[in-house]
Image 1 (tube, rainbow, N blue to C red):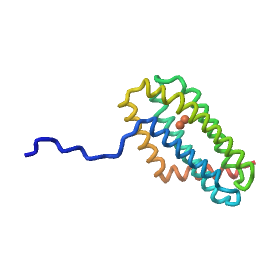
Image 2: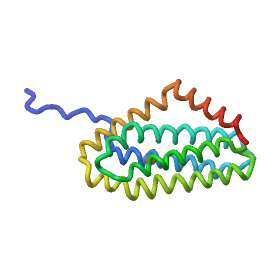
Image 3: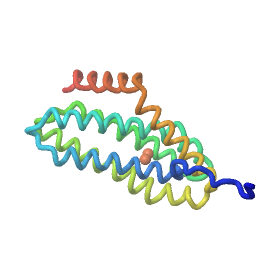
Image 4: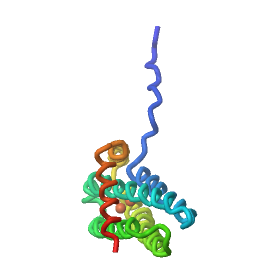
Length: 178
Ligand SMILES: [Fe+2]
Ligand SMILES: [Fe+2]
């Protein structure tokens, strides 16, 4: 006779919202490192990587702005600055996509994007906002938010409509390059 409930099946590991976001920051950093190692003699590869970076950073901003920042409204005062830093990052991302990957300008735009990303993601989020959130927000809330962030990121990545819109945005940016 069964006297104990069988152990729950092992599901995917659940992560807090801050862990999900830090891991996604690592994805963005990895793409920038990869781009920096790709020489200007391979413009097609550079263009493809810049496109991937564009899409991933766009999705990162969406999940933070739609799910994480609104949920943290009463926990941290750092949100107003974070929204405006996202706008600056988006502008710098657009400048990178507009730049010709065979030129030094592309490298300069990439350096500026790297600096802007580290200033926002590392200094403002990982060093200030996230520790504050982890101190004051409930663990269950953070794990629940982590599930929502992961699910939303997965849906954005696999959405053909989102991919098409982002590809169109990048094409328009290149055609308005100065
Ligand atoms: Fe952010
Ligand atoms: Fe972030």
